[in-house]
Image 1 (cartoon, one colour):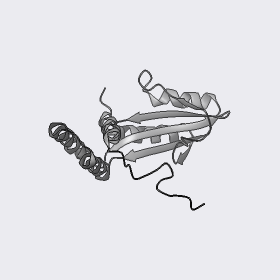
Image 2 (cartoon, one colour):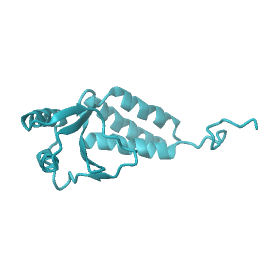
Image 3 (tube, helix red, strand yellow):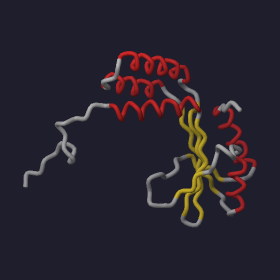
Length: 161
């Protein structure tokens, strides 16, 4: 199944309205101390099943977030690529992939639905495969950036005490 997140985004919004959920346009609060349960989209990709669990839990408000792919994301990767010390053929390969990825400028690359219930956040996330590829490239480049030996653990600031 080919994932078109622009179409899926519209379907989700229509379904949320049809089921009388309040829609909070925001982001899932990742990183707070609240436990997180992530929906298994690989085996259960239909967001309607996720919404059924929300309804069964008497949830009335769903957090809806989406991210549009932008050329700045590719430019950030290119900046990182220039800083990495990689063999020229590897740099060319990555640059070719980044050029292909730039064709997705303006497309929806990620959608999140979430709700809180009894102290836990429940999250449904759909990502475009090409966006996952960009994230993998960014992770790889970040791990290959040269270490800055000038900076210490305090972010370059020294105590005068």
